[in-house]
Image (cartoon, rainbow, N blue to C red; front, top):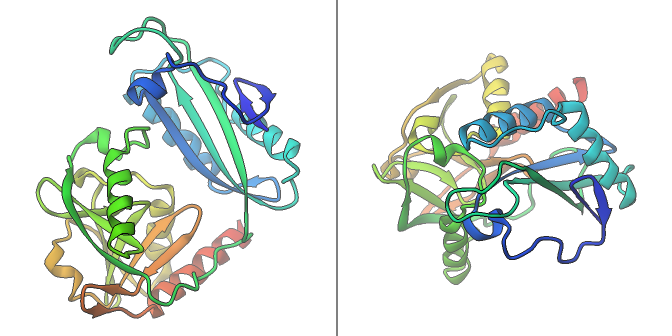
Length: 281
């Protein structure tokens, strides 16, 4: 079952053809990891959603408090029998129905969909050949809108099809300045020795929740340094390690880019520190 505007309904057709999220991509979403009824990084997700709604000029309902939305998420977790396991949750917010490009009203609708997930904490993926390449058919535009998690994901869809057709596990996206900004489903980090780089938000990468967590882990490690700076495609083959981050997987090491093979030593260490932070938190 899903949660549609507070009502628990069967996971079937529940929006009309006039829904603005469907027609124009006039919607935002958050992907959440929930373990035994605890929403990982919930405060960060909530404030990112509120910030994104303001940027999208959505009128935030008075009842959209952190406590209200958490209760709505856990309601659908419980009704699907996932209160004592791990789950992947998508919280979708759109501007309802009506209008062309200009909305007819300011009403906000939300939908919460859950599915079972495997691991309580983050583990190193067992893919021993995780291969990526650049996706160069289309480019990300640097700017504020590119940093939001909206339903406008055409480049990610096309890049995923390209990856499948070329037997790749993922692709790295470039912005219009030809800098590496992110992967199809997460932020990207580059490691050289004990120095780690990740593209800045200004380059157009998603303002990722796991990106923020990993940066904090690195800053507090005492063993590594972190720099938010533009990354050229030429730097990729010179790196010791590359990895992708998102809140569902945690850290996904990249093992091959073109002819270059990468290690995972630092990636594994950072993942252990992330799990320690979660246990202590």
